[in-house]
Amino acid sequence: MYTLQPLSYDYSMLEPFIDAATMEIHHSKHHQAYVNNFNKALENNPELQNRTPEDLISNLNTLGIDETTKTAIRNHGGGVINHNFFWSIMDPNNQPNAKLTEEIIAIFGSVEELKKQFSETALKHFGSGWTWLVREASGALKIYSTSNQDSPLTLGHEPLLTIDVWEHAYYLKYQNRRVEYIENWWKTVKLI
Ligand code: MN
Image (cartoon, rainbow, N blue to C red; front, top):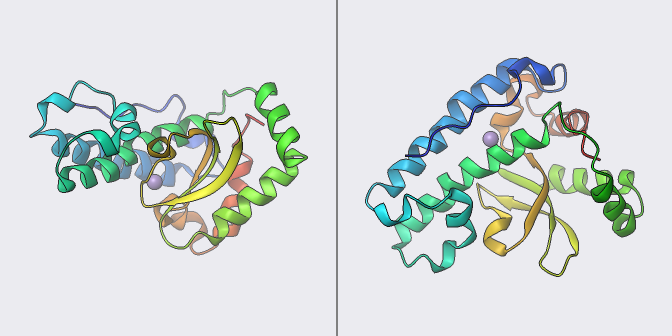
């Protein structure tokens, strides 16, 4: 059985950018539901239960399981790990990562340019999903969005940054103002 990983900070610690009520519902209801449904998806596959969700999502296409179970793992296992990663990106205890910042400047020209391209990608993503900065196997950094709970791990890419652009991530405070949510979300990111 997989259990919901507790946050390493209080729900109120991202105020005023991400409000405590959104954080609490997002973590204790939405994220918990992904955990519950992920466990359900593995009920009939005991051989998968000892593997981490990251491992299952990374090897999704070679697990040798039926399509229904595969879809359930992609959606709910993806929901589990994407949220764990998202919470870690916004951790107020994070320190700037000089190596990542240097890499970003080398590829995008500046941190501001990375933020601009990332924000535009997040803004124009249609429907539910996530926007990512990833490192490909070649070492190249790329920005793209995935739909639903699809993870870059399935593509063999290492996630470096992510924003949740499902409406449940911002609707309570920002309603339809995704652009304002994205701008304020950056203020929670201490890594770059
Ligand atoms: Mn979410």
